[in-house]
Image 1 (cartoon, one colour):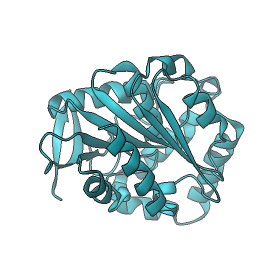
Image 2: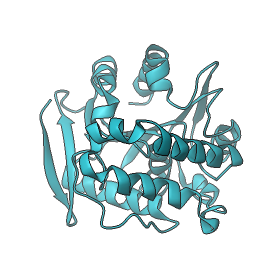
Image 3: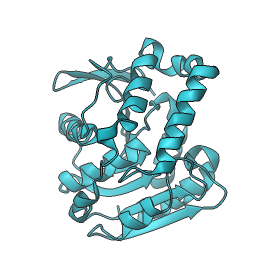
Image 4: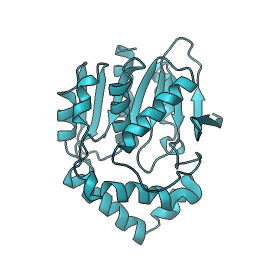
Length: 256
C-alpha cells in the first residue's frame, strides 16, 4: 500500500489509505507513544479484509514518516489536541463513517475523539488505553527510559522514526513523569461517548491495571464491551493477533 504526506492545518502527516469497500466504514488506526504506521505491520490489512472495511493509518506529528514535532515539551492536554487534529484529518479525507482502533496513547486519543466528535465516530476499539495515571504506568515509562539508555532500543526505533527518535522519546517519558501530569484524568469525558465501545486489555499489561477498563466501560453512555486476555501484556495485537482480530472483527461487524 502506497503512502503519502498530506497537510492538515499546517501539519504534514504521513498516511496510508486503503479504500476498496464502497459504502463501508473506515477503520482509523491510532498508534502508541513509540509507534508508527509501519509498526502496525499487516494487522490493518488483516482486519480490513476480515471486517470488510476501509482503513486509514497515519503517523502522528513527530512519528514515523510525518514531519518532526516542533518541541518535545507537551501540554497536559496533548492527547485532546491530538483528538482535534484527528477530527481535522477526517474532515480533510472526507471520512464520515469512522471506526477508531487505538492502541495505548492511541486508545486514549480514540476515546477523547469519540467524546468530542460523536457525530463522526461510529464505534471505538480501545486497546490498552489510559484514562488516568497509575503507578504501574510510571514504572513502565521509567523501565523504558532505562532500556533506552542501556540497550539498543534507540537504534531499533530509528528504523521507524529516523532522526526524530530522541525528541519523541523525550516527549513521551518527560510528559508522563512530570509532576503536573500525575493528576491527568479524562474520566469526565467518558459520559459523552455514545457509540459502541470495545476495550481490549492484556491481563498482564505492564502499563496499566484493569481499573482502566472497568472505569471506562462503566462510565460511557453507549454500549460497552470488554475483552480481557490472560497471560498477555501491553500489545495484544502483536502478542495474540489472531485473538484480537477475531474479537475486533466480531465487534465491528455487529455495529457497522
